[in-house]
Image (cartoon, rainbow, N blue to C red; front, side, top):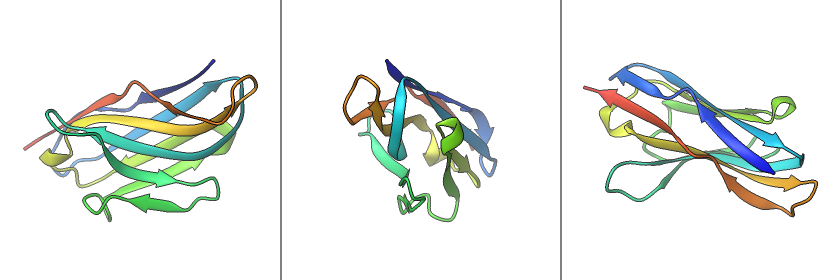
Length: 120
């Protein structure tokens, strides 16, 4: 069984910062791409940032220059450093990862999400 667990969400004032973490656990052989997505009330889930196994990153235009994605493969963890937060960043943030397990083929796995609320 492989799972992703996010942490680090919370309530912050506009202009503040948060750092999200997502740890993959279970019988893991390898992790390829990892990413963060978010879903605000009444809206579709959208991409925030992704990072490949080699460290190449991709960001949504709305977060470029404010958010930074990184990963620590020794810890099977992906991070999202969020600075200069805006009220429109309020959403549930989900991580996902393309994981190869000891008993499962390559599969995109999702976490359950962590709430980020930015007050004005």
